[in-house]
Image (cartoon, rainbow, N blue to C red; front, top):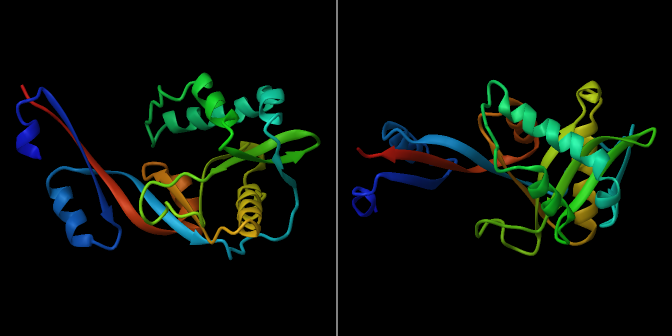
Length: 209
């Protein structure tokens, strides 16, 4: 594969490795590959925060469009968070139009936490899978979670995750999975509490002169 690309001015390599395969991870690290993201999985038997101190609900397909002026500020704040230290992720591809198209897609489910009719937290879920581990009908992908800074520490994120897990469990889902960037300590600290890491994506860009 390397020989195929060696005469090109620039090559992007990406490999997915099992999280327990420390020997391979070490090998690719020596070859100057870096870990971009990790994937984790957990059971929908999840019990992390059953007590509801905020109003959590799934909003209808019409509501994201009608309340976009309430949803977008949280997603915009998420991108601004990722652009800062220590993540340094420019995220130029995640424009308002891209987010709006995704959140209004019929396959995207949007869950919110509210207080006094204000959206203080948002989380999306969808049936997408990206490997044989997550492609089954009994799997649900979760991600794009953000809580207003002034409400962090109130277990809003935990309540959202618990609500999503309980909701899809009633529909027959047995597992949740998430993919998140390893450079984001907030994401890693949250997701790794409840999900078992099973894969890392390692990348390397090579520019040949």
